[in-house]
Length: 466
Image 1 (cartoon, rainbow, N blue to C red):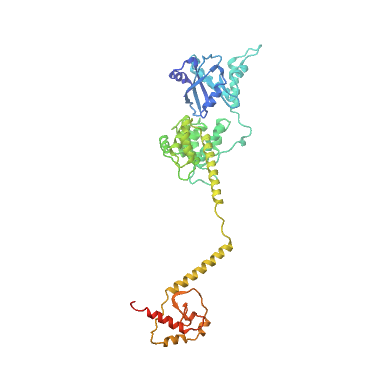
Image 2 (cartoon, one colour):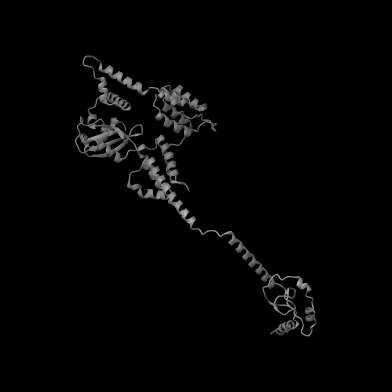
């Protein structure tokens, strides 16, 4: 909005002209609390109420339409308000006075003069002190005004004495793939836009600094622009480079892409917030969104696109309707603090769980357990071997020869062999001593043929279809 349309804006709001004021040069990220603190410093306003906000042509400042509880005296209203060293100054406009303003040409000159005085830190009273003639001199007021403006303009466009003290831009040529030592387009353009707003020098010096960072095809584009438009500014240089190397997406395409951007799996909310803000910045450059709506759109998409399992996003969903949308820096600080708190809390849980694990057994205990397991394994294997072994054939009752022959077997061979196990095996008895649980080859006892014959007789008694 232009300041010349302020009177029409106040009439549309149906505010009494004697109680209406308009503030300009207000930052877009200012809060209502800050505005209230500034307005409370001016007692002639009384109680104020905000009726509307509109952006200026640059997209970096706001116009505020306010209604006061007291009737305003144009002579008592200060031209600027603010808190020295903290906020402001913000210019004060009275729509009632704008109706009786001089013609448009004089109004434009007055606006330029006030803007120039504000940049130099001077006030209207300082300019009046310069223009007032001495008691004994006869001066031309118009000539003195021109000379004062000339001196102020000379200070504004004064080139720094040390041209090498500024931060140079990285080299950019537009060649693909990017050669070593050069910068890609997106990082280079972001740095160039930021540095142009910070360089305190004339536009000709800004153009020179841009050109000295360009090589190859990028430099040719600026040369073609200078031929077609010799009066091109530094901003025109950047617009030409954006046309040649920037994204071809329109504002509507970027808006659709912004609305379809969601938080990825295992992505922190702070990283997701950073991706959203880059898309918002590109939309702002393309004209798809005004600066006053950035905070609102960012918060809406964070609430819509964040994962439902994210604890930080859950808190934002519960509290975002209770306050005005915060700025990017404020929201990012809150999200990072919440993420660090959750990370520290989860880290403490891990430490407690690790401390509750029982201690590992010592080496001596492990060795004893291994020995016991090996002994049990050997015993089990011997039992399985004994159960699966072939049974001894039964001898006949009338023939004692085999018994005697078995009993007469020499024990020299058995004495040379050692028994590998003393575990009794059921259903087996020795043909030497007659005891159960082992065979003759494993026997170390004395020979007892009587007991052997009794064993054989008892086994043959239960044979057949009993």
